[in-house]
Image (tube, rainbow, N blue to C red; front, side, top):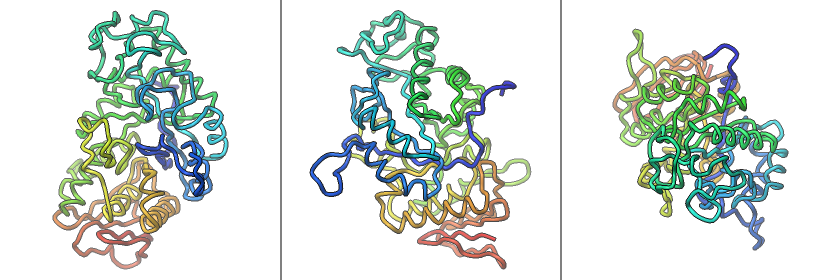
Length: 405
């Protein structure tokens, strides 16, 4: 990183809660009444539980006016009344979160016009709306430079080489800061050059930044982080999919890789743990028949049943910055919530952090076993294993056990 650059990856002791799921825009019933709650009100009703669990960040859904109710086809960036609730309700929620910081979901790859899918951008407009669109956008209306990332079919691809586009984005992010947001979750970052994420973070100085770089190859995740100048973390898709395959097959050999004379975790957490945000599922990977993005995400490969508990036994005891999915914590029942609470408490108590050391003791058929910072031990799989004398069992269930000393 450049000397004096902002630290956009926190202290290493952050714990994220994804504060929504794919259908959260529908809201909820108000304690049995027929009136529909806004989603912001639903989250606000659970603030005490969020604080008590020890989450330090809540990632909230896209807050701007959008063509799609989920928020991922933004229309008017500066209009913060959305399908999730009003700007007033959003501000009230962020205030109620108190010590827990709010992370905004930022969609910068694409945008649509106010009345059409074309270049009639407003609130804010760009200095030249057509020049704000990449010239290779499928609409044919763009006069800007060629796209700096992968093509995406939703909305008009914005030209981030355009100074007016970048200026409008920085103004938008600063508006979100004025509402109370303190960090950014960048959507679809493969759609434009990573250097622009570095520039936006340099300008707006979020306390935490994470990019959705959907890439299961850990080296390509590292390459994207490098492209930001090291100014952002990334969701650790490499660990997520390796862990999913492991717990489903009870084969854990892919969970380790040799490096420097010892075995390290095989995902991004083994290579650049301070920049890795681990997770099991999110609004895109959860099972949803109505999901619009099934071409991009295999939503049939979601964690379910006791596999959720096994997954958190891994992510909440290992390095990286862990993220817990709202649906898992609030909707999967008391067993899963109790397990997550036990693991969150243990992580804080034993000081496990983003760069904790992992000593892998076994990783093969039927067993994954590791010790973290010589304070916590975890085993996954059907085979028996124990860390030995002097360890106290702290959490257990079908397919996993966790100890501490």
